[in-house]
Image (tube, rainbow, N blue to C red; front, side):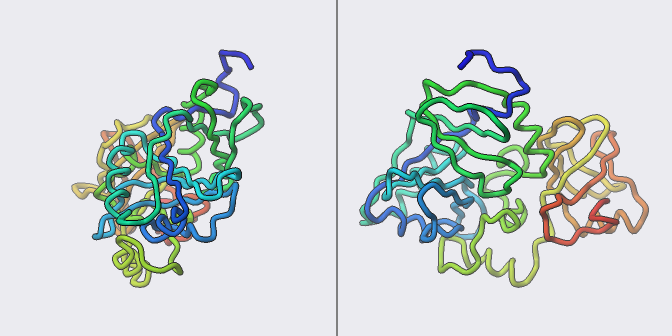
Length: 291
């Protein structure tokens, strides 16, 4: 494999991600009882999207959970690197006497592949559980992980309307519904209790999620974090962006009011158009879910 990879290659090492290894005879049961997704039914070679929440239902960290084929009592959490230390600490608080080990896995790197690309020997491939169009996630030895095209992956993710924690929403301040986790398979509403479950279930059954992550379209990208205004009222905030599109966390009711009043949406002096992702099932005002 060449050392330098053309940006045209659909592969990217994700240096802002890291792995947490959860292992032991009670690892599956332990994870299932504390995170938002169903781990009991996760098959070897499969993946789940989930999160650890505060008791008040807000996201401490979201992650992808992998079940390696060759390790039946082991799970890998693909999480934001900046949160790994705190994530391990918080998971350890819930371990109690469970026969589980929770450790960082620094020997492996995380990557994404969204097209044909030959992987190094020893790479483990998992489907991205959020959306098939995102492609695959790859766990591979850190020493063999080429850089690939991280900017290309960001554009791919943003174009599909998939929010990213830390850039598109703040950890510790957002509910799963607000980040579209309920739309992307990140919450199992049929499983039993987990940390924060009561609040999340209430939002689901009452339909009280007014804030959603949607696609923003513009001619020139506003600075990340810029507010979206309709007249004097804040409608939302711009997150990450690439190639004329971005992710915005938006109050759908305020966006609908702006549409009804004929008010343009503006962020840092730039006109913004909002668009519901094609995979989303929530309602959004405007023709074809566009404001």
